[in-house]
Length: 626
Image (cartoon, rainbow, N blue to C red; front, side, top):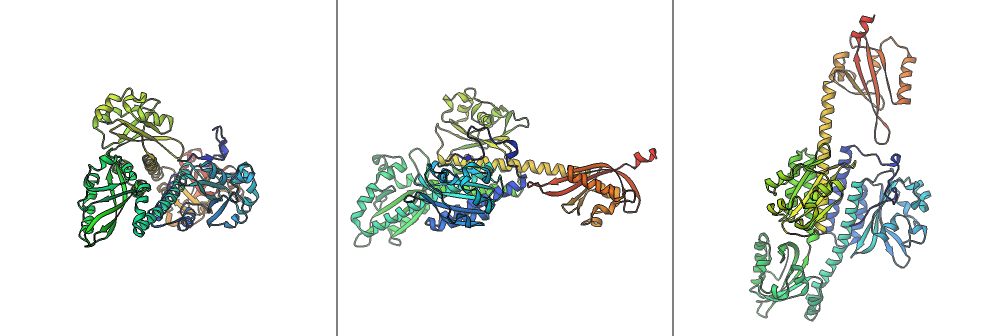
């Protein structure tokens, strides 16, 4: 896991001045952007499955970062030890000429080696610059950046076999392009690339191993004893002939213990039938080799995913002498695929407008399916942000859920209360002995849970929305895959909560718009009418079909001269709005007095998007005075 360093934030953690903080995108736009990046991750994960080396993967990553990730340009640079430079090897998008003669050193004793790409490469954490041409660490490239219009950049380290190898660099012409969620997703993309490179290396080793086994029998012993992959030889009755230490380590047994177990006992029941059918065909001579992905049960009871390649060694009469098996632990890849499947299903449910309750239940059940034996719980912060309320916990006892419903948000209040308070992940290895659970350990024991890991659910604006927690029945710590799961699940829950809030706000705004006693008129940036409410029709007599695409001047009466209207527009342009009394004309030609308020609506780029006018008929107030 990498730590993010935002180059626009000071190292003492004080943060940028308010004027330099990126504006938060509207909820629907942000959800669309995140959905696109999730789609990019899905495309890359699918590509990893079918590709065999980085020559295929790197061009696809750069293209996907631009087409789905919203970047203008992306490139991948690989460190060259001889020249001590980071050399661009693949790129995609606009402005790739920027890379011509680009010099980035891997050394930290020169300015070209202290920029974002080199820092990300050396220190193994992402470096984000949201104001490229103003930041001192990008000074050597300011002139080039101005020519190409770069506003933001993000550099994400790519490791290979645990060592620095390359950097994914993403550029956008807009300032403040990278928010926390975008950074987290691009970091996950870089981690997926690192995983793919490691997988390519492992796959090459596996192919080399199999080829060597086929080539010469005398090489078998050396690979058997020293291979990083599990290897075994079994008799036709499925008893063990021998197994290497790598397989023993993979399954958690000593050699003596392993020999007392059968293949059937070690295989997850749901995968047994397919495995037995293939071995039967190997036994009767219909197959000489087969490959299968299956699950094994470790001594601890945990499941591991394995890639199993089996080859027959036959006697002179063609009967099976023994079978040689090559077993690779592919748990990280399979778990990543399951998380991706969960993420896609949840986002589809969100896009279809599913209820928050249904989405939370789906998140917990899918997370529990990825890790059998775990019990997941979602808790939601109350409106005051002071307590946590039960959201979804289908596998925890009702008495437990009732007891923790409404717990205060505070340090030392269990795993979830503390996570919501500190805004950081809380991992409790042993509930029975941890001080955070002092007031709840008897309740946890009665519920049959012994460890708990909780991730805060935080909105784009930094508000704590709740927590996502995983409970296990035995004490223990999460591995990297489980950490990735709780991060992904918490992020999905946050998207669902914010989507529900946005829908409620839109429904409220629509209700106010439709039932308001005041007339509402909306025009586009060119001041052409695009919408109006029922009150407008009731007061003026005009329907939307009457005035759509027209200028609001159709309402003008002969009571005001051009100077009056020029004054209104001057105030709108200078102050963002105007308010006052005006005489308008109804559809039937009748003039009437109105109190009018005009406001300007701008988008996130500070461009005029709409003009909104609210008016009320004040004839009843003017008539008595007249």
